[in-house]
Image (tube, helix red, strand yellow):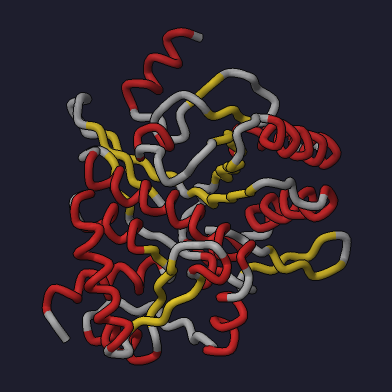
Length: 143
Length: 152
């Protein structure tokens, strides 16, 4: 759970992000099991279970595949999109982030969280996992 | 217990499983790896810490708190109250898939902790590990109860 504060507005802005981190190595999980997990994440929010357990409405899912290739991340992203589509919940795609990384030990914290190397479900635009306020403003201006 | 060990015990209570390299990255300068390995050997010898992994499964040693270590961590205000079964820990020690996965997940959590220390605008206020979340989140899908097994 991250609190992000910026102070360049007169009134400092503060917001929270809550991430479940999913790490997959070498081989993708079983398709039905992964899709069930995606459904489960949506259900934990819909039923209030997530907020009751973690005391925050914020929830994003960060899926990291440890691999030289981007293929597994692309597969998990596609399975997520198929699941959300079948649930009629495409708008939840913005809460799912995907990336692959060759080695988790040698990546710097900035590379992992602040570099624009993540993709949301239903999008091919690269984004950081944590967006600082200035970047949010920039993204809004560029739209 | 040596005062210098407190931060290692607290880190093990927070992250559950750490290699010497991860402890170094989290708490020391990169040149301190040998020192950290020496401290970990002493902590294993005095019964505060257990080891998993190692050469038999072609992995680095992975350290976790023993019951005595968890008791000491609780005196430091650092335990999370989750009961740990020694037999389960032993089983995990022989499961390279679980251990490699745990090392990778812990790398990401360490990065989150270090990021919050380096970037003043970001504050990591809570962190849950796989052990804490195990069997805690169940939902009903298509009329059936399903337990979500989460990484973190």
